[in-house]
Image (cartoon, rainbow, N blue to C red; front, side, top):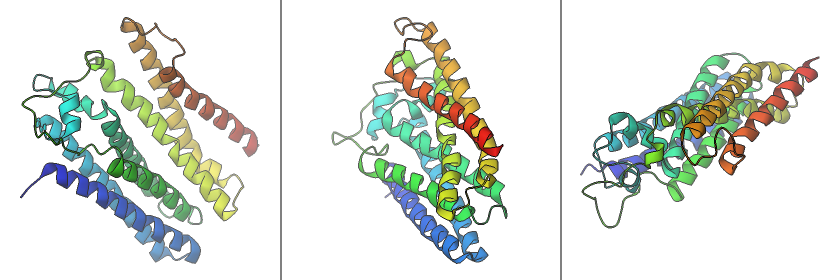
Length: 270
């Protein structure tokens, strides 16, 4: 019998298995230097990306169809919410935010693997292996600690609790995704840095490869922080544009770190 909650959890398990396979094959490609093995790792990365996309679509469908068997859907939506806020409820709580984070990471991975093509063949296997490690971490976290497809023992409710009224705001549509794009984008330069350390290729090759990705994530961190300031100014009780609260600091510190990184690699290239 069809069960959406079970299907969602199975897809998350498939993500973990696909990431583990790709990680193993990527390490084998790095060790052997065989292009066919590297091609298999690239194929595994694309498959992992596709599975994460399926998981997000399943959760989005659960929100749009008001499937209150899922605790996450019941807690962050109700039947009276507009469609656009039903979709933003995907990242309205911890469980869905982790899945959305993983989805954005998978988009980065797919784009990066496609962009790499036949370039950086010494670094590429370890870039893929590092990124698959991050994917595996999030998959394990959701499977065992924050599964957005978990169900309530009490059964499906007639209606959900609804998204926090403060979050039913236009900025909820654009602010969290902008910050997440910035946060997640830092994984690509990190993966190139790990690959450079593993291979011992500590020249400027990895810096050139990672520069555009780092600039892109830095730009979205700036955009996300700016949108957060505007949202905080609009909402009463949020302390105006900036109050140095933990949430704002958690978003601002990665921006500072990426700014320092971009300046430091410019000096290294010289």
